[in-house]
Image (cartoon, rainbow, N blue to C red; front, side, top):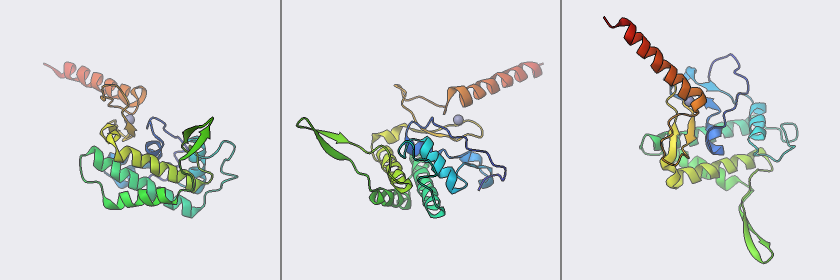
Length: 207
Ligand SMILES: [Zn+2]
């Protein structure tokens, strides 16, 4: 799973949705070689730190108060890869694997936190849970978020960044729906610079 040198906890938040940010904890997925991908969730503490940084566990509950065990990490990685399989199939206009959908549904069903109505001065107000009380509860919310992306018209806005060594997944929320890069500051500019170098090279070799 990825190179042996630890990449550190460099999280990416351009996904636009928690489930896509979660998928982006493994990057450079399109490199072709399995060992070329970069894995950021290497140990249980990495998952605890990510859930905390993503705001999916209540503030003040870091890895110390809600320790993640090996079993939860393994389940989290299975959920993450199921979401990614569904996202990549959707982007490629292919069939979404039944197995991936089943995994997402299982996590949703396992979640203790559910939306509920609360009466506010006689008016029912929908309260959707934003964080889980446990790491597993947080993962259930990620699964529910993925279900909303995959199971509604939002699926048309799923994208994969074509930047070299990137492969970041994101939701294109631009008005025209033509966002190409995970981030203009990173992959967008790198691509522009490469195009300039290519143009300069072509000009130099022209007889
Ligand atoms: Zn990118």
